[in-house]
Image 1: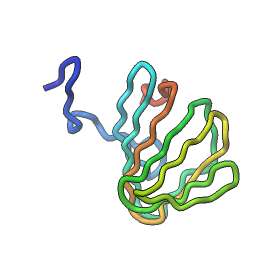
Image 2: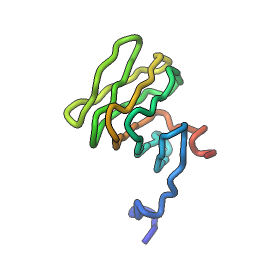
Image 3: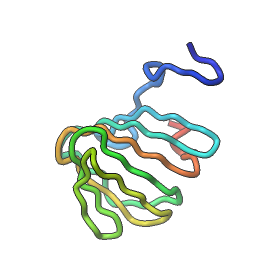
Length: 111
């Protein structure tokens, strides 16, 4: 089915981008879209990057800390993380997340 416009999500290989973070990555010229599944209790250490990041919880609860401010996100909330701001988090429950990065994550293209 793949062509210039339409693709099958099932054709995207799942990759472990950090311990316990299993992702399907879609890259455009301007963005990287990261569909993530993570089990309860798994944490992502505090870090920063040049990319602006928009984070959404599709299922479950995820505690995200941005610039020292913690917040539990669920499907009713999202976060915008500016470039070079320290952030990290922990899955409170099993989660399905979407992160959108701008510009595209060239490091993730190499995974």
